[in-house]
Image (cartoon, rainbow, N blue to C red; front, side):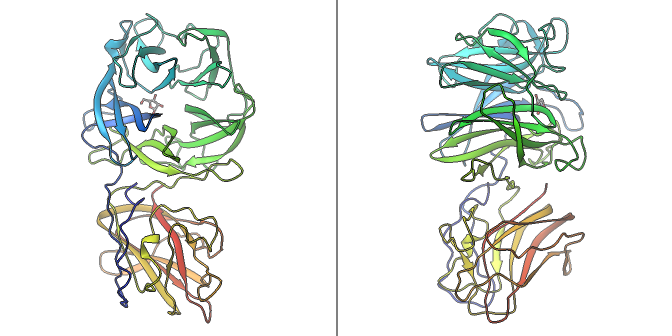
Length: 457
Ligand code: FUB
């Protein structure tokens, strides 16, 4: 997030070192005045509304303390305003605690806010529904009791995390569930009653919780949190976001891959929305100052679909914006290409700027420098190849500043030099203020980069 837009670099100056691009926007998380979690984005007109729970756990408390839901708004997906608590446990007179994840679905000029909340009846969590006449409410209980509870036949082992979707034919569906137990049911046109039996959807591989349903180009998508160690997370206390697609809103689903890897909070809860033609992934982390697993904060990053409808994995932008420097940049190329959030179509794609160092040969470098130490264990680089003087490098070597010298990043996987792809690399987690990518040219050529990302997964 902090690096999706950069000011034009002062690239008319030819210097041997330290060409600098300047960040012009703030970093993730989107707000730090309060801790926020479980974001559910909704675009109405030209405004992005993000419905989120508020984490109120004091530092050191190892439990959720969540009593109200806030609405965050933005018109540029960069600058957000906290509109305050627009619903709380008191919105549901039959409930008493745990304002967990919710989602708002519009229909017929009304806005239905489906929530996870602890009712005062038997069992633990329930799905409630409130209704308002505008995206900011005011919202009131729409039903006078839970829509789903532990006494609902075939309900989930944990009745949380509703996602509601209205199809083109007007039929509404609700998915929800935790503890590896997804459930689905049709909703009546009034949006506050269920129709028919609760079903157990098939094909949501490694489902844990936090479903998010949408439709795009006639295909149904379900993104959800998983916590398997089969490519998702290194420790099943954490979660990633997987996704599946289906040609029927009730499935069966076909698993497609990972949208978001492990983040700094154990829980991983996300939603997808499109604002001004750009898709975004809204999620939460523990990255805010003083943050933690029960003191989470909403973050946002651009999300990209491939031409075949699959989703590109999002590498989260985190923390403070880095300054970018290089050993050399050609006066007609642009160091702003590096870390501007671009997703190239191929290695010759200059549409989101290109960094190149012609006529230099041999080993050159680009570097990120942060004002405070960053924890990092992942990098991806998309090499530039103009089919002229700039070619793919022969090799690359990431280094970091250990406080007194640049040293090789430890435990690194191969530094890829393939064209037309994001070359992913993982390494042991380091804490540093400077990460440098050295790259050595093929004989007779210079080198270049379209995008380079560094993150903690
Ligand atoms: O915020 C409380 C719970 O944590 C949510 O309902 C889950 O999705 C997880 O994010």
